[in-house]
Structures are given as structure tokens and as C-alpha cells.
Image (cartoon, rainbow, N blue to C red; front, side):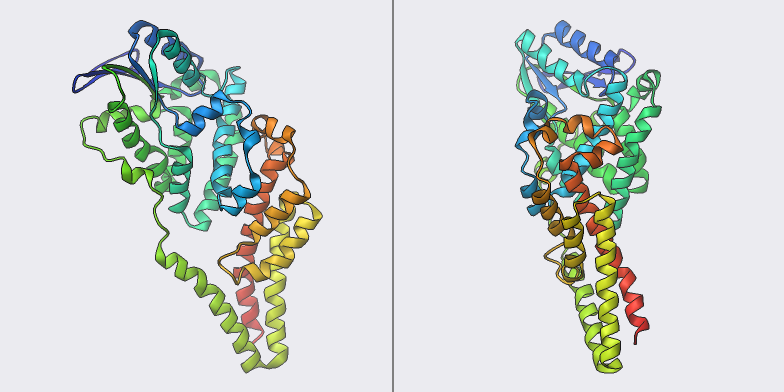
Length: 388
């Protein structure tokens, strides 16, 4: 193995294949120039890029977001997946806008240069939806909330990063630097977002067609790919969504059953007045806090009302979440227009834009209503106990 260009280019061999591994910062103009130069000089048979099919299509088709069915996203319980994806994209776009380049321009350059020299294009990354689904599946509600706010705060932190710092961060890639920092508090996040993808891309690069291959990846993945280069890797387990923990499903029913049992006990042991007081506390705590959550997302008045009415009932039914109800009401009350999808990439670059755009506002309504309803459950329990 040989390295050059400040350790950003690694020359590897695998069987009869020669692989030139190029590390980049995803918002670096110097990385764009490096990718162009390497591909033009090497003229490979194949160029591997750190993209999956959905991200590749999003880059090539500017109208991709216009095909999003927001109601389907809510019904399929993919709100957190889409919102996390948007926040990660917002961070890169915020930095890229400061440096006057397109986010992921080095990947676009790799594709264009590959086409110019007649090389094939090989998508080496795992589907972003699988990655985010595996990540979120490994987290509790509290951890999801923590991750959501940490990612959201990273958008504002992008303003503090200068061009010189971007180049210094090339050694680990600016986006992965943020994810690694989050991974210190949430190790499972680093495992699915970085470590698993190191393994996946290693195998995809090794199995790419052609004898001479240029692989363009974020610099943060270089060391992981080099470490696993000669290891046998099975990508099948990395492409599956792990089943939910059966105990999680049981736990979802335990709390509602305990609450119903507590209400029955209240009426039986404390009398009608005590039982009614407990019922009032349950409805009030769930409804009010879910409504506050919807209000925090600047939801439509009908949406806020629906969250207040739905939360006390949905909290007793693990199959339905208050946020799904309020999200659907918001989607029908303020149906996103074509322009909302057209301006989505620009709006997500600011906090104000997240709340202004009808698409992201619907996602925020789902998340904040669910958080309010969950908090209401834990607030209601001690208040109900006091009525006995």
C-alpha cells in the first residue's frame, strides 16, 4: 500500500485489482480539484463514489423532493428518518453555502470525471434510509430526542467553521467529525452511521467491476476502510433492519395497562370523586402537553386541537401515536405546495426555514406532539397517585 497527497490518496491492491482510494471533505473546493486530477490522471475502469441510489438520484434530479408523499412518510412511521436526513443535509449545505460550493460537489465531480474518461460509476454506500432506520431502531425515545436536538444545534454551529478549518478537518471529514462527537454520548449512532458503513463500503469497493478503480469517500472513512481492507466481510446483515426488541413491544403495553389498572383501582378504592380526579389529571396532562408540543411546531389551530383531543387516547394505545394524528391533520390543513418542495433545500439551512416550510413543519409537528404526549404520561402518573 502506498499513500501520498497528505495521506488523502491510498493505493491498494485486492486480487488482480488496483484501487486508488481518495479521501475528501464533503464541502471542500480542494477536494473537488483533487478528485478531478486523480481521475483524469489514472483513467480508471470504474469510479466508486460514497453515494447510495437514493442520494445519487437526489443529486442528479433537482426535482426529487417534489415526489415526496408526506402523508405516506407519516403512515409508514418514517418521520424521524426523513427529518434526520434533512438535518444532516442542512449541516452540509450551510457550510457549503459559506464556501460558495455545492454540497457533495466532489461526488458530482467524480461522476462527471468518470463519464468524461469513459469509466463506469459504482455506488458504494449503503442506502441512507437503511442507515438511518438502523440508527433510530437502536435508540430509545429519549436518545432519539437527544440526537434530534444535537443535530439541529449543529446547523447553527456550521456558521463558526471557516474555510481553513474545513481543510484541517479533511483528516476526518467535517460531517463525520460532528457525528463522531455525537457518538461519544450515543455509541450506537457512531456504530451505524460510521463504523458499519466503513465495512459496507470496503466490500463494495473491493467488489466493484474493473481492474483499475478510483474510490472517492469522505476522509472520515479512510482509516476504517484501510483497517478492514483484507478482512472477509458479509454485507447482508448490514443491509437488514433489525427487528424490534420483543421486550420493547411488551413494555409499550405495560404502561397503558398499568394506567388503566390505576384508573379502575381509583374508582374502586377511592370512590367516584377520586376516580374522576385521576381521569381529569390523565386527560389534562396528556392533552395540554401534546398541544404545547404542536404549538411549539407552529401547527395549525385544528392540528393543536387534534393533538389535545387525541393524546389522552393514543397514549393508551401503543399502535397509534398522537404525533401521527396531528401530523396528518397538519398535512391536510396546510397541504405542502410544489414551492415548499422546491425551496426545501434552502429552507432547511436555518431554524426559521425549518418552521416556515410546510414539509418540515409537518415533521416537526409529529416529533414535538409525540414528545409532549410522552412527557404528559410521566407527568400524569404522580398527579393521579395523589388523588388516591
